[in-house]
Length: 140
Image 1 (cartoon, rainbow, N blue to C red):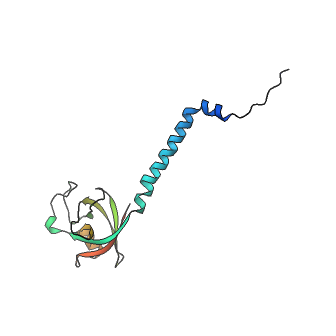
Image 2: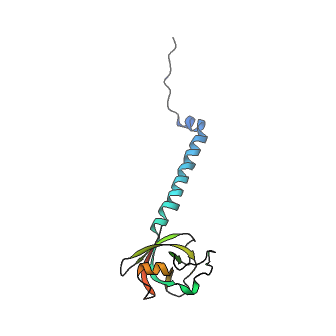
Image 3: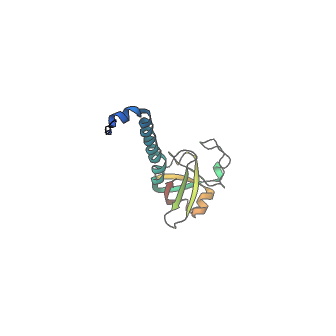
């Protein structure tokens, strides 16, 4: 009769045999964390507070920096750095009214202002008459 020897767990041997599988697991885990922190985490926390203004009839029908035609009756806005197509929630700090707009232009070019809203967005916020308002911007 043969007596079987007890096998010891050999980590080095296991790693050697399954090197590619281990590498794939490490790479996929790294990519998962990278995706989570670049997409899910970074955009959810971006906020900005400052003065907003609006622009309307004078620019209606002209091309924006993104190439779209500006329509003062749509919920759009101009921002200096946010990517075109980014949707942002703009909240009027004084009256707590808010609106979601899409960035499709560059600006504002007046010092101290952080966003230029379309006439429709300004109307939703209740700031058409004043022309400017203190707002909070949240990108998502």
